[in-house]
Image (cartoon, rainbow, N blue to C red; front, side):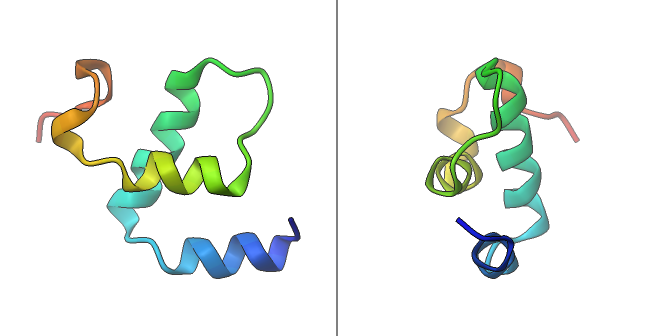
Length: 58
């Protein structure tokens, strides 16, 4: 994946989805960054089905 492909895909996400994607990366505990499809999966996961550790109280 190129930076351009990442930028194109991230541009389609809302700020909340980007935050969810980043939090998903953190919560995964993986040593390396995710693939683009995995990041998008984290970003688009609905908050209702997220583990409590990924839910924020606003």
